Image 1 (cartoon, helix red, strand yellow):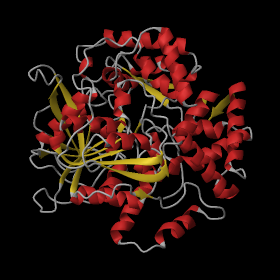
Image 2: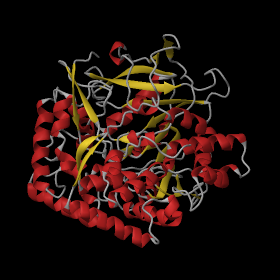
Image 3: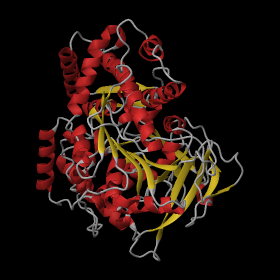
Image 4: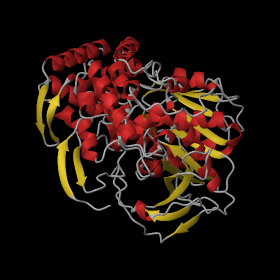
Length: 599
């Protein structure tokens, strides 16, 4: 895509609903697919989350997958799928797919086929996710027998056409500034803004917006599997990807070969558009920050105090101080105000990946308490937005809020249009959790005034006698997908098992547990499930212990134990996933840390 004149502006931090996380595998191909182009392809820095150097618009859509070398050791393809599966001869969506090929040939007896991943969202890009360090780490966890595959769901990022309510990115971003920079308790303003956004969505709809929903994406996943000559799916879905996964399993229970949903959301609550169960364990996750910080001592945690209760009191006082007097900031990353909304959203985001965020978050809080807000402001990393000003005016590699809203509002029950109902919902969410305003602002309230499209016929129930039992994974202190939800959803799927990871953080890869990842590997390779009630521990705490540096902590807690070569490789992979600060650059993890604990 050509580039025109560039304008830059500092934009506020806005995070995605459930978050975007994902997994990958070593190089390999799917049977039945052809590969086009040489192996040099178009390369990009895999560490640069979201960089896009591949000319997607030059790949024609096809009902047969043709893979092209792309990025760095990846292959890309496009797949045409019907916008409406009830009218297969009608308009289509052109899905963008990416894979990292297995280390073995498809003709090898060791080849085990593709594993399809969804990173979460809704609105998360699977292409962006696999074009990163995630691919190698997940390949190591699963083993080199699998292709690692993902895609941008219909209406999202590089899949076309995508949901777009605005003519240019700059219009969208400046309109979105009010989401978290204004008073989050100002329901009336949020109500009015949503009505305008919904009207823009309807005005810019070319007739396909109504087809951007989770049941259709589930059907697209079956199309992807069938396009590779396979009849059953192997899947690992995170966060919102568990809603997509539960939808697929309920719609196509006989199409399951291996199926993991990780960081499990309450699908019934999601489709009702209530979001009333997501925050059940958020305070548990925050309590873990207080406890781990206190245990680490002043050398391990910069925001240390003698007891968890002392740390909690200090944080409450700090939030109230910033609420009363926002901190003016001019730093290398930009300028703006560090107000209580930004501070709370950074704390909330920091709960997603404790091993990547707790140490720098504690440092930022300590600096703020000492009068320096720059550290914490820079952790939020307000992006310098680049506007490409030409007739198209959009960066198609960018995940935009429009796609998230389209999926949420098309999936959920119709939301009342009146202000009174909006205020009642907001008040209810604040009773559920002190973080209720953050979730309300980016979920149900965004659907006020949404066009009254017919809903997809599938609305549940989320039950099924699947052709292979499902593995569900939940953390004991997940900030947005409580363990309770995994246990609830498991009841609907015969012989499914819940694996519990005793950690804070969102999804299993937010904490280093060799136990969890070995169960995942065994499940994908031979289909075995852990015993019901199994609980996996982590290898180390998020903070270094008092008087023990990170390197020494790793030596004591991990490498001194007796491990096989395979276990060492898996351990290195999960350390990379849980502690690499780049994970926080994905939608949902907006504490964008330029440096962190070395791995």
